[in-house]
Image (tube, rainbow, N blue to C red; front, side, top):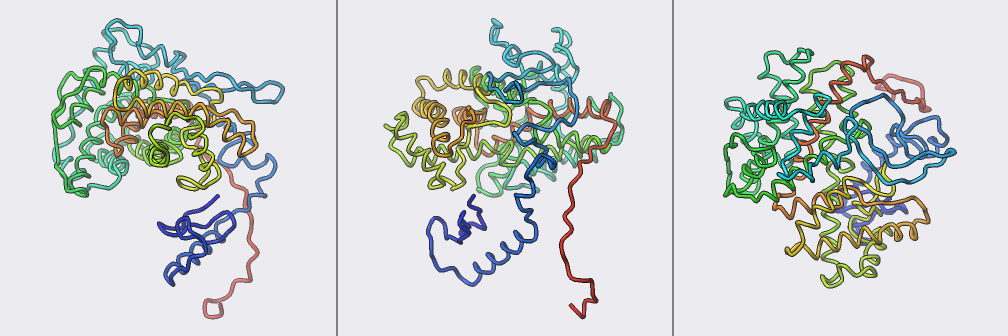
Amino acid sequence: MAIKIDDRLVRGDDGEIKVGSAENVRISEDEAKKVALYDSFRDTNRIPQELYAGDTVKRGLRNADGTGVLAGITQISNVHGYEMRDGRKVPVEGSVTLRGYRLADLLNELAPERRYSFEEVCYLLLMGSLPTAGELARFVEVIDAQRELPDGFTASMIMQGASPDIMNVMARSVLQLYSYDQHAEERTPEHEIHTALSLISRLPRIAVLSYYAKRANFNHESMIMHRFIEGQSTSETILSMLRPDRQFTPDEARMLDVMLCLHAEHGGGNNSTFTTRVLSSADTDPYSAYSAAIGSLKGYRHGGANHKVRAMHNDMKESIPRAAWTDEGAVADYLRRVVRKEAYDNTGLVYGMGHAVYTLSDPRAVILKRFASQLAEGSPFQDEFRMLETIERVAPQVVADERGITKTLCANVDMYSGFVYSMMGIPEDLFTPLFACARMAGWSAHRFEEIVSGRRIIRPAYQNLEPQVPPFCDIADR
């Protein structure tokens, strides 16, 4: 795999240094030093891949077939994407359940009033059962009452501490909220539930304010600070605070509510949820655990993957004529170049396709695609939606042909999530922060379970390879 050394230099599969996509280009003395530093860094830290042969070392806590190593038991959710028969992984349609309920059923698509669902999903995850109408109303009241930030917090933590990446501001803000909590070190059920609800309530406000602080500090644009409106759902609150005119349609709020539900929880094995459990198992405070989870979610191999998907789609739109966006041959040719590491970022990855668990389908992508289709119909985004459908249709065969593998490949949720956000005018800077706002519910549920049922610090082992070194001697003699 080609490895990026910096914005100019790339080391190809053949080990040769390239400047961008060009080969055999003279590099400067400073660039040569960067290459030497990279080589030293790589040689010092690299573990030869052949040492992972066999099934003794579970690299990345994965079995040899890619499945996750069982590290615990959970009642919170289940992600199902294949069956094991006679030792073989058999692809099946994907499904995800929260506390035993199908995610699709929780979206209230059949409810005549088409009410918002995110708060109900949060209640289910945190409290373990579906709420009655009265319980849900009280739960929403509690969330609504928590949205205000401490005095001076916005000025000191968000406006003065603006960052090019909103996820870092969110992580720092969660840590700072510890200092405003007189009971921060308590581990009582009351405090744990209170902390979770306060963060579910406040994170959307922190995210939107951080976005405008970034615009003002780095883009020299206007800083907009709308107050939240009492009684609005989480999705309505986000759109109301984000839009300069505070206007949005019911369909837009409903679509964002669906996005929040899809991202609220996804099994205990994902990286950020596992991060929450690891820190919780060490008996640290909730703010430290949730801040670390935000740092995990930021990564491009996790929640930040939607940025890679959108960037690849934009590159594709620039690479082929608009009239060919739905032409299977033209799309396949582009994807073929991607897989051959000749297009986009030269990694050979078709972003938005494939998942660690799902095989035939990602149920989140299926749901999101249906809603996206309705939102795109008759809009300026209609052609792009059909382009995504074409990618989903032809990519599995292209990857199979180019790599000679038979692994079943399906579109994942990121194929459509960034596209849906774009249709709603939500800036890309907020894609992953909104994911974090939703996932707070799942992280909280897993923290609750870990501190009650885990009772053992998570401590994986690493096999040590003692390097062959010369005898130790005094520094003057080295």
